[in-house]
Image 1 (tube, helix red, strand yellow):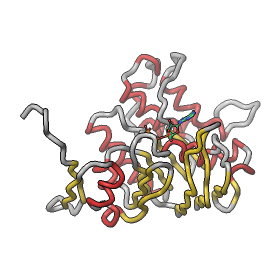
Image 2 (image 1 turned 90 degrees about the vertical axis):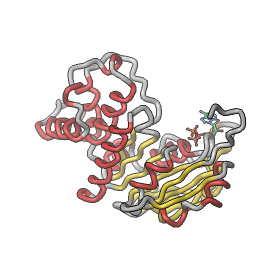
Image 3 (image 1 turned 45 degrees about the vertical axis):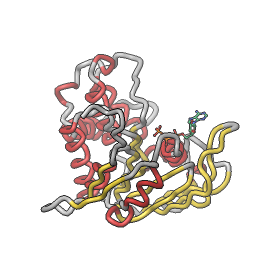
Length: 263
Ligand SMILES: Nc1ncnc2c1ncn2[C@@H]1O[C@H](COP(=O)(O)OP(=O)(O)OP(=O)(O)O)[C@@H](O)[C@H]1O
């Protein structure tokens, strides 16, 4: 379980998160949404221990995050970050294998277990055909799938994703979110996904958290928080909410101001 209590966190001279309180149970799938600059990435960086809280605490399974050695943190939390740039032309299979570092000893090479975890992660993300391609020479969407595979190879119970499917086409976005939902159900993974696509989140994330100006403005079951009032407050844009006939999914349509648009 992850518990965030009265968290204040940011960058030198730039406070961002203000009194954030959250509790995420093991096995939850949570979507984190909000406008640009609202603090979503900052929250994920705090949850990985990369950014230290100015005030407040973050615990995972009762341990204060800052007290856990980095290898221990990496065994508990895998991250797919927003920045997908990989400078060196490593083969994609080697990049996925880097996800195994927290499980490897300093003086021994990869084990059969590591090799199996890498293969399984690449099968699940359907990236085996990219295995020998240099990661620097594949498309943005393909690279994101390789980075999801790397995080899965890490085999941590908690998975944090920051805009991890932003460069993928509709097919791969849906495939990836279906895979995440499957891992949540079958392997009890705890998943926190930052994303801008409200409708994708509405379909796959049973719980949604909206941030604005560094504070949580809505947190609850997707059907309850997806209201025109909340969406207008968060995005300053008029929104219509409707239920898709047949599958019960709640979806959102942001009503554009069409003045000046081509129609
Ligand atoms: N390294 C940094 N140093 C200083 N300020 C930063 C840094 N990174 C982000 N910020 C600022 O912190 C605030 C929150 O940024 P953050 O990246 O958490 O937003 P976000 O909600 O993830 O936005 P986006 O949707 O654009 O990815 C913004 O005002 C941003 O300009």
